Amino acid sequence: MAEDASTTLRVGLYRPIPGIDPSTTGGELTLSIFEGLTRLDSNAQLQPSLATEWKRKDDLTWEFKLREGVQFSDGTPLDARAVADYITLLTAEKSTLSTSGRWRPLLAGTKVVDPTTIQVITKFPYLGLPDRFTTLYIGRQVATDGDLARRWVGTGPYVLDRVDLENGASAFRNETYWGTRPAWKTLKYSVFPTEEARLLALHAHELDMVVQIDPKTISQIANDDHYRTGSKASTWNIVLRIKENEGKPLSDLRVRQALNYGIDKEAIIRGLFNGSVEPSPGQFLVKGWDELNPDLKAFPYDPEKAKALLAEAGYGKGLRLRLDVPTGSYLAVGPASQVIAAQLSKIGVTIEINTLPFPAWVDLTRKPDGDLVYIGHSPAYRFTPERFTQFKSTYDQSHWIDPAFDAAADKALAAQTPEDLKKATNEATQIFHDNLHAVFLYPQPVTWAVRSDIDWEPRIDQSILPQFARPKTGQ
Image 1 (cartoon, rainbow, N blue to C red):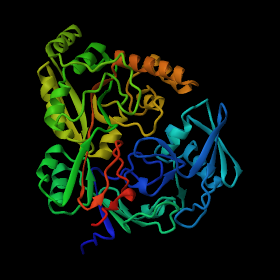
Image 2: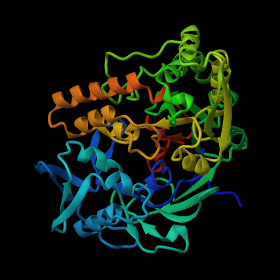
Image 3: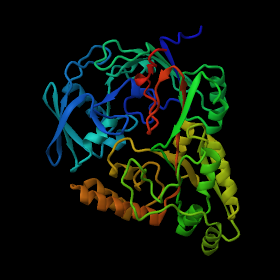
Image 4: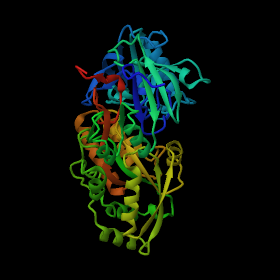
């Protein structure tokens, strides 16, 4: 039975749903179910959410005032005790929440001052806590097993109804939501992990909105009045993470340098992304979001220099590397990896492309097996030093040891003035640029198609947030 377009909004997802607990990263679904104490608006500016105000009490303590009258979708009040209980669950040593390991090193504990006031204590002085709390989505666990859709409740504009992580989910409007009432009564999420599947669904008018579509797909539906399409720069920075296994070719800096010189980023951008972005400027920070290190520039395409570096490292006769690639998770990931392999073959590097479903690929990124990983990193909040945690030696996807970068990253995290922060940020990005634990590629553009009678477009961080979609006036 077809859904009623006036009550059901059909959202296309480009990869399987990574999870349903509030700490899930990349949670296109969970962002409509759960909310943080703070949030970023469409211009990436910090705004109140479940907390209405906050202040720093001392070097280690932040105090947040909670919005009154908010409740979880099961009717339980959202108060300071509920927030404290969730933070305790998240940071517990044996927590099973997906990002607990990223919060445990930062958060020391909480103090409930009164029902609408909570103090959060950090393990070290930390200027960016209100920014980081845009990604601390508060939930209430009501079950630990059984139906996935019944294990957690949130305070958000929608309530999870059913979920199949591989295929999709549905949610219904939270009629007691404290904020602006969503326009659609129900959401239907469907997973289309391949470009071909997304294109067929668009041609059949089976979707109302979808992101992460190939520019070539956009051109194929450009004359379809049912949709309007768009593209703009995003915060997703695409790199090839390098696994520097001891004694292997990639443990040699000269080989890592050769890879950076051996890929023609501008040609890939022209051919696959219609020239909509620029090569990454020798750092993993994002233009328009972070304050870049002005001394760093993009690695130019120089195949002769790349071949000379390989010969100097003892690989003048060539070498073979494996590139692990996820299906459907990044824009034009298949064609891009093929072009990269073709370009590197010209400098004597044979690339074996290993394509895996997203969950299996995620598991493999955390293991030392392999050589290169095609991956995108996006800042979730406006505090630049937190970007460094994804590239420190201790991160679960890092397969290198770099004490100098780790120390510079920690220095940036501990900075107490904007001047010290900028100085430490430049130092850290310079060290990473010099030691090259990644191949810098390009920021991925965000592309979308949305039904013509709907007023909506995605944010630069590619968040879908269908709760903000509205029927166009007069439609």
